[in-house]
Amino acid sequence: MNKFIANLLGNSEDFPLNHRILNAALILGALLGIQASAANALLDLPPITVYATLIMTLFLLVLYYFSRKQKLFTFPVYTAILINTLVYTPVMWISNGGSSGGFQYYLFVYATLIVATIRKKRMIVLLISLSILVFLGLLYFEYTYPEKILQYPTREDKYADLIIGFIFVLSGVIYMFYVYTVQYEKTNTELSLKNAELERHNIKLQKHQNKIETQSKILENQNLHIKDSINYAQKIQKAVFPSLEILKRNTKDSFLIYLPKEKIGGDFYYFTKIKDFFVVAIADSTGHGVPGGFMSMLGITILEEIIKRKEVFNAAKVLDKFREEIISSLDQKNILSTTNDGFDAAVCIFDTKKNILSYAGANLPLILLRKKNIISYAPDEMPVGTYITMKPFKNNIINIQEDDILYLFTDGITDQFGGSKNQKFSFHRLKKILTDNADEPLFIQKEQLKKMFRNWKGKQKRTDDALITGFKLI
Image (tube, rainbow, N blue to C red):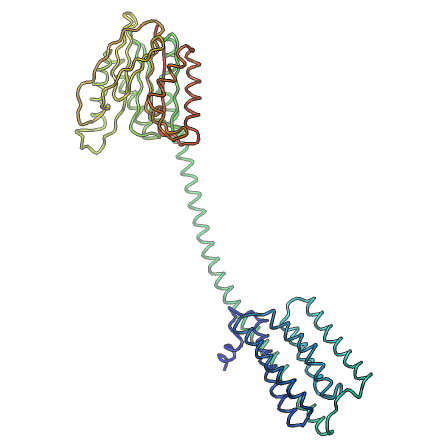
């Protein structure tokens, strides 16, 4: 039975409580209409009471279809209330004995329907007020035109109609309250179950949130620890790098641009003066960031050993020994070794007595700018490290003239993507900007190069660590 009633009224997921009450009221109204039609016919009341009630019954069933099947609420509820109040009530009042008839009992059903289904207080007051006005208007009409009111054929018919109407209306009101109570309790039970389920979910979410917050704090602490470690590694790297004062003291003019991609870079520079030899070297290690930083410190340490302690002043031999030490330090037995880390490097060793420069390059070239003319010295196309072919590096001997400018740079300069077509900056563009600024002091060239690099890169990400140095020796 409960399942049958639930099917008539609709489930709580699709129909709120007031909508289910409306469905119940429309069914009740149709049942009362059938009862009233039968009673009016048996009591031999005016035919209009029978026909009007049957029409109203059919009308309520149509509204039930819209409410239950089409899931409409506003249209059925207001239509039912207004038609009953403004049309059906006046017709039945006039044709069924007026104030002495049984139809006035049905006004209680209207009031119950209004209160049970309408949620807006102002609308409830408005509709109740309308019902009262209609009731008072009908009383006034009856008082003014008593002859217009159709009376019962006999006293027996009148009291029979009053008793039948009272019983059915009372039963209907009780039924409405019963349905309201049952549906209200059902809704509360469902809400309680949903609240309990939500509470369980909230507890789970709170546990997950606490877990996430704990993990977040752990990650935050780890992140701070990593940042501290990186900052400390950066300090160590800066301490290992030679002072730029060495470059300034041993050159007529010079500049250096060092732009690591991250806090710690894999590119490094090296300057030193041993006896009559001034050494300038740069290198680009495998990778960047912390791994590149460790490689750079290893590279500087090895160069210190080769140049300062072993006093090797031939650029090619420096790179040869550099390669040997890297292969040994990183345990690179052959090209199939698990670690193939290494360096691209360029070494310049200037004999200050003879004004002769020794240059050797491992994938990094040397540019000589002499009287606005570019002279490029190509490097050996192999790195400092394990490679397919590992022949001795070539030593280039250059006689240095007054105001010659020498440039060493890593591929982080030429390989940077940017420009309107997102291309590499390229070796060609670098040579052009150096030629265009050949007459400028090196500190001006430095600013022009930094500006060029910044403008070319634009919003593109940095490709790699970048390093370039330029210097005049005599």
